[in-house]
Length: 81
Length: 225
Image (cartoon, rainbow over all chains, first blue to last red; front, side, top):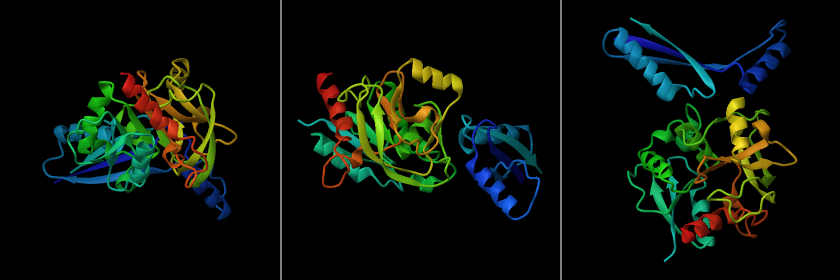
């Protein structure tokens, strides 16, 4: 059993109104000095089999096929035992 | 015999019945297609309607684009079949790669529902030949994730090739780049539109009947071809 963790974030040039709304709320709660908030998604995927290069390749394919839209998002993949 | 226009229903589609009604009012035969269908039943054109297919989970249209029917829609579109994606249908077309760019969360963060003035910019597509260039129309708009984005190069290409089909007038309701309300593919048979022409096809229920020409345009095109 291995675990794949995929983080998906909007590309830096894509406006993130949700992140901006969170930043505004943090300011109103008195958290000073917050200069930017970007909101993303994390997928935690458990997979049968070893945490090897094959799985890394499959995880990359999952991310680029479905989990992220590469027009507007970037992703990172981590494979854990 | 009336020309047959397929309207796809995905789990969570909302506007499939209005789209079918618009097809009938335009003089076509509406054919119900189901997301699990593997063929298009020989229809002459396809409408991907608005709604919240698969609950908008992951990203709007991200899961629907892998529905069995979409393989047939993509294949048909690449062969010249007219395809119109409205709202969620536009999102599905972008996710499937038939149209460039993506639709993102409205910059206001609010779901916007209003009668929207548009300018028809391209009348060479399969779905807009019944309009005159520069014609202003008013149709309902209702979306939470309607902000059209693409990189500068793609936007410049859309402008240069005359593939911006409609632009928002007076108000940009969702932060779309360059006020884009709709675009087409290079061949002009695939059009994606965020506002809803199918809700503006008869005086009783719509603010205008300005939307009907999307549906009469494609029928006229099909008769000629």
